[in-house]
Image (cartoon, rainbow, N blue to C red; front, side):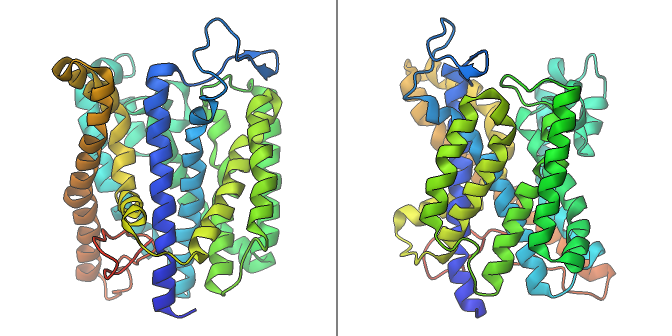
Length: 388
């Protein structure tokens, strides 16, 4: 596959990334008003419970958290595809790029939310909340898991998966990527068994034991498998429609029976990998809708960082000004979009450029410049270079 064709096809990854963040934001917006989950009666969901406000018709909206495994699959794709294009793995360069890609915008968000939520951040944990978030281990304990910004747990897991990437490459070199995925699936099943033995299956709130990187390593690596096949001009899923027809009902069923929820994230990741491959091989016309979703995908990291703590305050403010909650919700979308766009240009891009400048200044290796696979580009028309 030539580089120009790869750039064109990678537009599909931006579209999928945009859909992922829209799902997450929609899930958080819905949950803050109608509730996050349908309660259990025994091992099944009880849509008739007196405390339940969610109808069966609304239930699919509560599955918007699927955007998170979709992000993991896209991340695995981008990281591994970038490695394949470089032809070699340089650990120092890899972690340097990862740091400057995610940390500047992230740490600013951590500081801002720490200062604006002092009652929730400081006592009784003192500075542990900030330190654990700054060092990406806040997903390890209940006390810090949802601190500062409850969306940040997945960023910690993402960073931990970066740390595991060299091990994935080592296993790939020894036995190949398909066998490595089989091994990671076994690791995930073993972790599930241990977590189920030591801790109960969560009712609805995710917990440290059930968000370990060892549990989602297989899910992330599915994106790497798609990248490896894509880079060689092959497909991972020969009949994608058939795969989705099998995976989606299994996923829905897994969310309705409590013991099976331990595999819901992985089933969602598998369906996400199929969807990503479909998008990569789709011939995009790049009309206004696709361009708009790809634009949202390009600023999705900033939107993920800022959206959840801003939702309710913005809606409350909009309701007081407009006199209507419905109108307030309609007004929130462009505000979040503008805030994310500003974060992208004022924090994300300068951070990436700063990392590249420092690398070029202090090393003789100029290969650390961000590649199109890990640095989304804002496109205003189809003539601009597309990136994933």
